[in-house]
Length: 258
Image 1 (cartoon, one colour):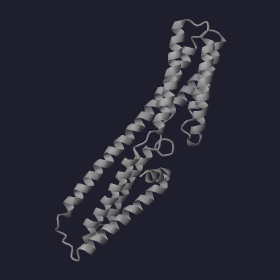
Image 2 (image 1 turned 180 degrees about the horizontal axis):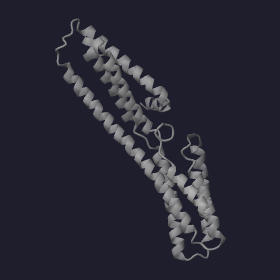
Image 3 (image 1 turned 30 degrees about the vertical axis):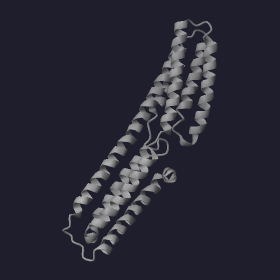
Image 4 (image 1 turned 120 degrees about the vertical axis):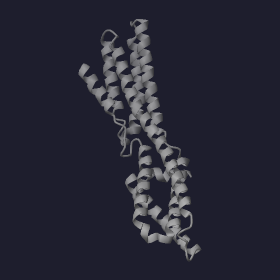
């Protein structure tokens, strides 16, 4: 199962779409051939349509639940970007409460940190940005400790809390990026979809010629639904990505205030 999950994750979406359509067509043809082999004179009045309706209805529910799971993770990634931008902005404001050059230097470092975090959406730079983030956080903490020598305790406490929250959200953002729909869920959904289209071919095998066009459209719509779910589950590589505008607005605002 892990091999199947890894293979699906490695295939680009533009290639996965025609592959899924082709698999669905093959399963449909296999189902139609099985129908003709088992019954030389198929009875079109047989209640197969009820079975087909039940199978497709359950498939629709499975797709809906999986889509809801993927969309929920998308919303969490979107919200956490806003939260990180707000946390960095709060830390920047509280660093300004430190008198002297130490406060200004800390604000400049936080501006550079915001620029670093705004590079995260670029897939090729993700690992490098995370390594640079860890180093930047270490330097920010050391710089803050040096700047708090003559700072009143209430101001020191608020700045420390702001820094902690900023670092915690960065860690949460990394964890959210690495969280995906469980591989078993995707694999079972695909397996059920393949079996369902096989049943479609079996039920419509008695009148295959009349249903070829609408059946193909059904498979295309089914594939679009599955690809959309997989797209939502690929936060940095898919076509549906989280907007990074809050981070961009933060960087622009911090540079203007500096």
